Length: 64
Image (cartoon, rainbow, N blue to C red):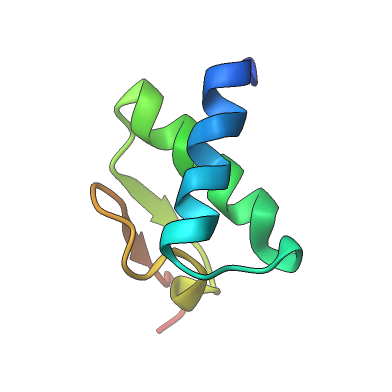
């Protein structure tokens, strides 16, 4: 379990603004902010689009 700090929340909000993301996808951006902070560059997800354009994150669909 990774802690969600105030800095992480701010980073997630900045990612939302940069990607013109609505509140619906905030938690994907929060996850991306945690991944960036912790140096985790790859996520396996069926929703590759949700992570498109986030520098430092590579989203891979294990089912494609």
